Length: 204
Ligand SMILES: C[S@@+](CC[C@H](N)C(=O)[O-])C[C@H]1O[C@@H](n2cnc3c(N)ncnc32)[C@H](O)[C@@H]1O
Image (cartoon, rainbow, N blue to C red; front, side, top):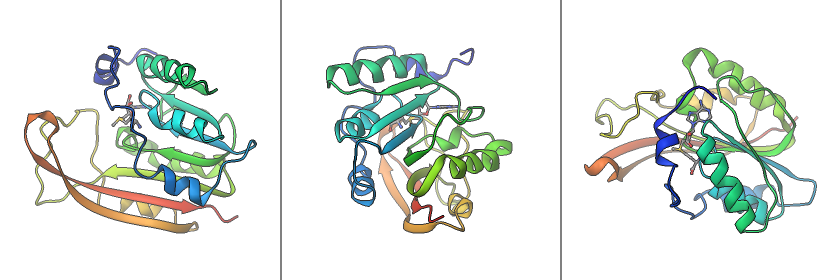
């Protein structure tokens, strides 16, 4: 892959940049769509694989992709270490092709890397790739006029408008919609983020 991002560098070492604790919402997704040998999960922008490997350990068939070769190398290493199978590969959210259909599609901290002109096509693909009855999870940082841009904001990232994420799922059953403001100390300076989260089910 020819694009080299900051993440490629951050993921170079042996330590896990995002740690190894699974994401906050995974157990909620597991309750909404419990594991079974034929249930498939896709993690989009999986980073170094902590969430994808956690889901594989719960008994799902897991696929995961990320733009970084180092992230995928570490995802596969973590899966081997935890003795689970995972289908992890390098791909780009802006250009990927559909490979399968899934019961859970999960993507945390990544859709702000979608180019504006690709948003609709991306969510059309999400619709096509989700099985009827399946669950999706997305979150995204959103702009608020009273919040400053975080000090470590990546120039490749694009803040979304408040509520915009929710507009891509008008025909789905909403299981959770959240907008939260929280304090963060990354980049060496305390600052606030606003984040929108959606969990919803494709009914038909
Ligand atoms: C904030 S990190 C989140 C990583 C992971 N989901 C986690 O929670 O540990 C954002 C991830 O998006 C990936 N990313 C950035 N641009 C991407 C793109 N165009 N296609 C696929 N992944 C991308 C980065 O490499 C990075 O791993």
